[in-house]
Length: 171
Image 1 (cartoon, rainbow, N blue to C red):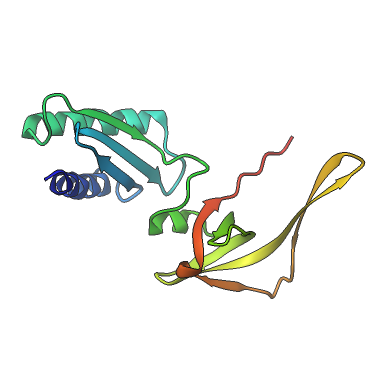
Image 2: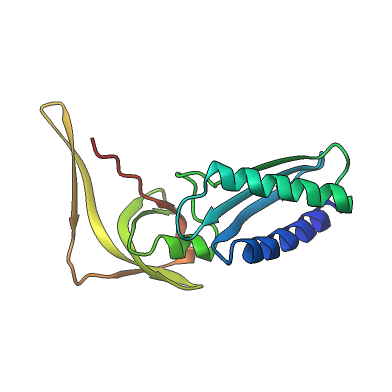
């Protein structure tokens, strides 16, 4: 029964977000546990999700749930972005990362830094970037350079564990 509730809520929220935000905001993940705790992760194509976006969606969904008695009276709701270090889960997240640095984590634990060029239902295509950390005189240095500007690497989804946006902090 809980799975059916989650599917029903998911379908409603996906359609509502599409209409309300003209396709700019999309659902990444939704869970509903046995205590009727609803957790919604969403993202935005044009920019990052804001706190105001989360509050707006939370209030709307809360009212919809109450008006339609979708969950018990003791339900709770949490709405947020997936987080900056969370693996990509849905195609629109991959679309948002086109021409940006990503880290591919392989099933064996190794990782690959690259610039996402394209993706489809079976694979991603990246421009690999060398990513080495060396210790010289107790200082850590990173090397980020393109291996070969003509070298494009295509990786099947079945060959890696996940893809994470690459965070770069400049001081």
